[in-house]
Image 1 (cartoon, rainbow, N blue to C red):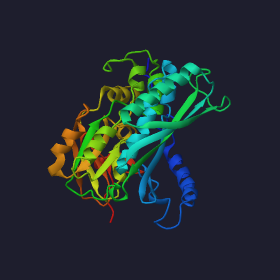
Image 2: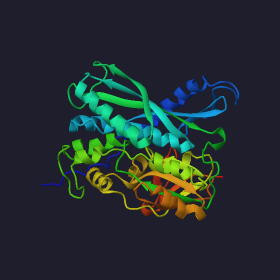
Image 3: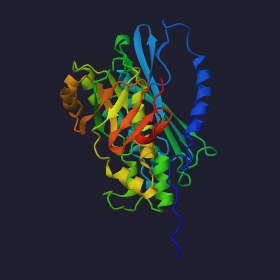
Image 4: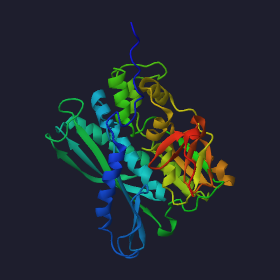
Length: 376
């Protein structure tokens, strides 16, 4: 019998996420949104940090107010498949406050939005428990929210259990302390804090690999994983607020903070400084990523474009402050280490040395030996 034909490597596109279409649509949307901004750079409501960074900052009478919004994406489907709803609220808080602190802001509060197929009191109470636990970990309040029952719109992995969960977070930052990475310079150290796993990005690709391609269920165990597939995918996103605020208050010059989410380490290129990032000391990715890559035949470039690969948050500091930064950022018990350094590079590229990759925002990663020569 002839061997079965080889399947092409899986990627985000084959899983149903057209990143190029999203970017194209975003450009048109942003054009209209920018038209709502107040004229000038001063006055009530002036936008000090706008679209494209981790959070926006507005001038409210000399007080910097930071704001951002995010949700848990298709992690909601994992919760439905597991029939467990008391952890995804942590993810919802995390995805917002981890962004908010990147501009140097102290998160204060958030409001949530829950859309449901069916208003199940047991599920809603469990979602509330997770939100409250996330708020406790982040040191914020939940000032309010909204529940919308939309049976004809919201569908899920389990009949009557469909839901979506998102939130908007608000924080404060002195206008002269807003951090957009403008101070980053070649020679700076990049310090990374470990992720808790897949967090809340790339779940569409992960679900396609585990449940469709590999034919597994949330209760199955896979060699090398050490827990069920469902447990690994549902593990809550780390919240990095305490560590980041401790570092900001320590006297260590913090040149930039970055939340590693969708687009992986290309999030580092959001900073204002035009530099490159050479990640030459990344730890081995946690087992969830190795298993996912093996089962899906996913190429290295796609793994590093879609997932955090074991690092959930980064701080960029002068090299002489590296040891102190690691001590502070690891103070809450999360693994922390230097993962790379900032280099001169007008192309603003990111190198993943352990995988031989180089990438740019909007273009993803390619093998370093196949990368086009820099222009200019």
